[in-house]
Image (cartoon, rainbow, N blue to C red; front, side):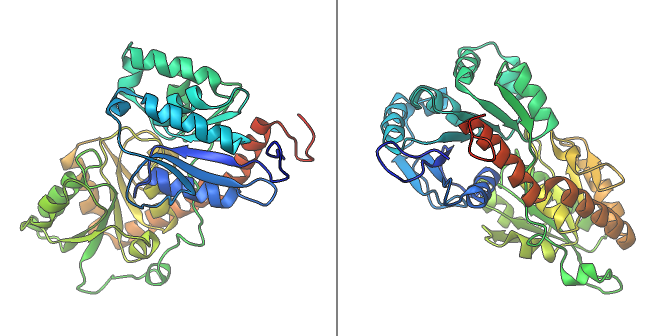
Length: 379
């Protein structure tokens, strides 16, 4: 345990994010902060930029307006403000959630502060370019004590980028299987079989082209045109919300932001993850798998941790509308296939992504970064 200089209070482990949002990174960080915090070693979230309240609800925020330099990779104003804040907080360690905050922490953290870089996604553009931005990230990474990659693909790219650290581990997204669980009807094995209710296809995520929101709507429309009784349910916010809500060719239920994602998933039949973005291990896929849903997903980095095509879900190529429609069509007409794939997905998610096991791995990483063993001795 580390204590703040000049006081008996333990120094916090500070989890740094760019801003609050209704996104998977914020949800995952909040889960970690709450699960890891204790009297002996408090954890808290700190954000750099002002934003409406989302899923993180940080304990502290610098509240900066988006600066001109943010798009270039860093803002000197944010670095100066963060430096003053960290000097006053004297953190036992910093945990960086995502690459955007890496330069800020590297340039602002007091010397000797352990830094754990949580790499939550992949970035093919950064890997392919030989730019000032890539050189900046490589230089900043020299301050990193340990890197935690969310999947094998993320870990491989981390090494290729030269983001070396004393320790590199893979820890997947974690979720509580007691919270994310099959709905009672699905658990009984006969949710809507034999009824006239439509098969509910669910999308959860940011409503933009990168996450495939428009592709989801297109495929729902195609299935309806082919005579299949389906309805598309979309939970989330984003730039395509207005356009999607005015579509007339497919019945879309637009839920907007949803606080209780588990409850929405418990009412669905199939979860659709049509992202074309670079991913790490999407938290919504973990959640849907734990809810025992049959999942159709594009083959993005990290998705294969849980989804094996034909065994625990269906995988299609990114931006393949025909493949996505065919995979969904097979599930819509075959309730037994939905049950089988959903059961296998839940079993795999519990084995690999249960929150308790993930938190124990994180506790070990943070303990080593701070420099103490299980008994408090210096390692």
